[in-house]
Length: 310
Ligand SMILES: CC(C)(COP(=O)(O)OP(=O)(O)OC[C@H]1O[C@@H](n2cnc3c(N)ncnc32)[C@H](O)[C@@H]1OP(=O)(O)O)[C@@H](O)C(=O)NCCC(=O)NCCS
Image (cartoon, rainbow, N blue to C red; front, side, top):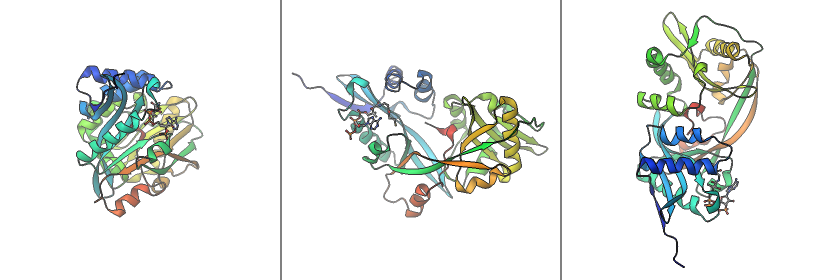
């Protein structure tokens, strides 16, 4: 019998990207196809080559996407290759294909000169075999008692508010650990791939302009806060944005990732914390300082907004 020919490379056409959407759609039964269309086809930060595929006799059976990103680590900006949409067709599993493709993707990230890779997963032991380490994050849950309408708060308007929101974002996030460095191209692309409820992107206006914003997504019985930011870490602005979200949605329960440093922004609310171990990092640059590695690995220190999810 003729042995199968294995080819590993980046996608080279729109048709191949659509094939990857179909592959992911069949590999992840609980996720809608629409999710993969956003992350494979609508993310303008990606080059075709960043969607890595393994083909057997010319047919794509396995995929891994490499998302080019830059993160803040205190004063430094570090280039990373985020990994997502790791998938193998159900009939082709257990033959080492995803493993081969992951190794290729890590080599690809190294060749690009990026310092590390990140991913989220529920199968941590699998990725540990490739050098990924689990990072502990925590999800905070708060109940805001009742919603309130605040006249200073209104929906984000892309045409008028983007520049101010970018300024607030940069002021709030530079200096943190793990937040994404976003230029305007990234912001515009993110509006296409991010799974947010557009009516829950709210801005807080003062006489001096926008001083805070929040982005969120409705879940069955709670609101998932994807990200927030305010000028000078303003706890009152955060509280008012939460009350407004509750007023709009009729839901009082909120969940969001919270680092130890950010607890002060919760202000008047009491909160409960739950550990989350879905985030993993693989260091790929021997010159990366021990201090940066430690900051990224420290418990409840890394801040990765859900709106940046890949
Ligand atoms: C995970 C997946 C990509 C692996 O593809 P594959 O080509 O079969 O991978 P490999 O042959 O290289 O490795 C198979 C390994 O994955 C492990 N694995 C697969 N699914 C797993 C799961 N849900 N939980 C734990 N381990 C799992 C297998 O136990 C096996 O481990 P081993 O190498 O120690 O034997 C494939 O099962 C898949 O598409 N799953 C659905 C989508 C998914 O969950 N993707 C990962 C998102 S983080």
